[in-house]
Image 1 (cartoon, rainbow, N blue to C red):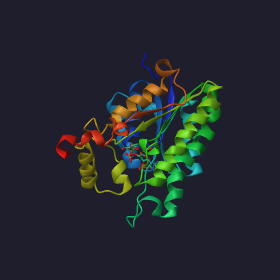
Image 2 (cartoon, rainbow, N blue to C red):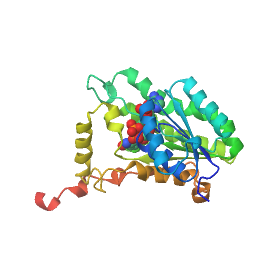
Image 3 (cartoon, protein in one colour):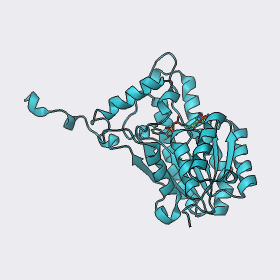
Image 4 (cartoon, protein in one colour):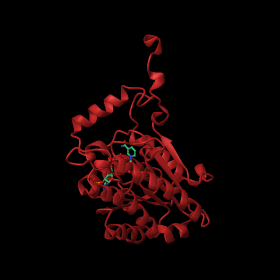
Amino acid sequence: MARFSNKVAIVTGSSSGIGRSTAVLLAKEGAKVTVTGRSSEKLRDTVDEILKDGGKSENINIVVGDLTESECQDDLVKSTLERFGKIDILVNNAGAAFADPSGVIGIATNINLFDDMLKLNLRSVVELVQKCRPHLIASKGDIVNVSSIAAGPQPFVYYTFYGIAKAGLDQLTRSLAIELIAHDVRVNSVSPGLISTGFLTAVGMPNEMAKKTENYYASHRDCIPAGRPGTPEEIATLIAFLADKNSSGFIIGQSIVIDGGTSLALAMPSHDLSKAL
Ligand code: NDP
């Protein structure tokens, strides 16, 4: 029997990148999935990938909408229950960093972006969990949040507000995990480093600049010791592991770093001291 047979999953932000790969993997391994995002066109591509991998259209529920709006969250829960009768797995993946159009970075960034960044990356997760909570308790389900190494402990200076939102998400993971494990609902999280997705273009970079940025970091092993960005499939594999009680049932409230070594990298070892002495 496939690993996620008889399981029902909601994957937010599944019109692109990590969310799309996660929805495709869960569906491939037997889950019924609700896919969601603002772009119906990109969601269509996700559905095509699921079907190409052997999924059935009756096992896919599509919700087009802005996750920061209560109506979209309500629609996600209601339509999933109507179509599939329960919710076993909630993957809170949708997220983004927003660049200040004036090019400012750090604390000088427009304060409205602080609100936008927290609304999408943190508040929408809190609201959706509140709405899914009784259904996840009924199914003894699993939540996987998608955080970021931008949450710390090291600083994240370009997109300070994004890092603050993800740090809040990590604390939410820990607190929720303890609250909900009393009901046999597990909560865990993944913390990716640089992953090759639509993330940088969503920040506002043209495709070519996003590629150049990835290549630059990949070619500097003091930035990514593994020498390459991660793939969305690699993150999806970890999310599926954390969503599967049989594999990870004793992992509670953890945020697992998956970053090719970035968060361990120190610049000192990458300098050739012998040349300086
Ligand atoms: P993508 O930009 O490829 O995907 C982001 C997804 O979020 C899209 O499906 C997008 O859908 C959805 N989304 C964004 N805003 C909204 C909104 N207001 N309402 C509904 N859906 C929304 O990026 P990734 O796949 O990389 O990002 C996935 C997660 O991974 C995010 O939480 C991100 O913070 C995190 N992450 C990514 C890293 C990376 O380097 N790529 C590193 C660390 C963490 P649509 O555009 O259709 O609305």
